[in-house]
Picture 1 (tube, rainbow, N blue to C red):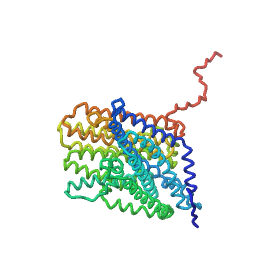
Picture 2: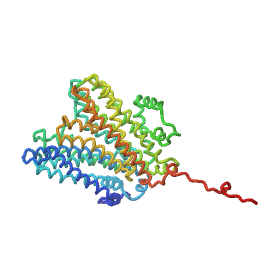
Picture 3: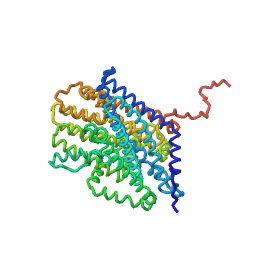
Picture 4: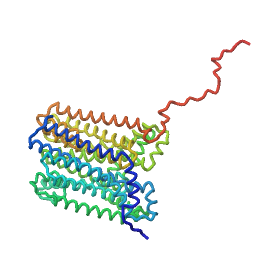
Length: 575
């Protein structure tokens, strides 16, 4: 008989006690608040030129600029990090076999699912709560009101709950953590980018296409509300909170109802043919796979780890569907940008294609090593005679091999763009080098954090958090400090989103100089240096972090004992 009980349940208490005893969570919250306060000082110095501006208008400008930068960055981080906290809640325990032990106890399905959900959601909520006093402090500067701060806090909490519940539901039906994350990010992309995509397609066709109302866009409710002349009130934020929490409750109830049927072996075996038929319904995917199989591939003798990543680490039908959706949308809008020739569209198409592709790379780069470490299969690799260099480089190259394909569309768009004819090929080459350099840095970051963090969720979360902070946080920080042109525009090129925008715009700027291109080249060199440093640090700390004895190839070879005396060096006297 199923037992129902009130309270958090033993699953929540167990996982919460484990997470609360680790110092990393407290350090992350303290560091996050310190970064927010430091960014406020930087924005103040940039806006005031290093001096305090006593005017009321100057204070209001600083408060408004910092509020926009902080809220957009925080909202983007929550959109990406909150799903990473719950993406492996069920699928990782299923692969380990510990979920089966929970199912044979007298724990109810609600205690298991809701306990895991709450234990992983509380750290995310606490991180958001730490930023509320900093944002409330901005009301003293002027430019924003208390209702805007409360509204931004409610929207951020709503997005965190919805993202965690969606990733938890994905984790029930997929087999790996990165597949749950990719599915969640795909839904985020369709939700947040659909207004821009439909307006662009509708403008080409000359019709008005239906899209979501702006009140269901979290960015419009927080930052865009200021530009609507006070038409957004606290009631709109509460409506957004109610709708998102209702969807989250439905996803949680669905996960509770379907936990035991899905986790039974018979239902799991019936689940994959539907996804396989969905994949086979698009024959061009199978044709691309056959063409990819004919391409040159690494040999087994050169690096067994890379060979395994190349051949055996095949994505599931669900992951193939998500990647195929991204490729199809990228090709469609890249071709539309080339065909229409609308100024500015090609820039943002390249920015979104590169940033979304690198976001997917950050997930796969960290989970390629972290998932095997969590499941215990990495211990088998460490027990082999392979050196640490072979293991780390095999994992690194296995994740980086997807980056060259990501350079094709942005380079093609930059090459066919209208503008300065003499700059076509140099700009296209610079675009390819930029994407390769940033991809190398993201790959090194994911492998390094998977080595240094023992928990899968923390490794993936920190990788995505760092990528989002560099992509969005740096961009809005520079925009809050200075005007985007002429100095800030080139400084923002360090963002993986705005960098392709700047490089593509070189085709349209008639006044592009060698200095402008050299700034982007400096960013390319900086990312290559960061990738090399992170990879070298991973190689140096891999054995210590994973408890591996130094490999035989790194040690000095053992000398065989000399069992026979050296008769040649002995003095032999006369008889």
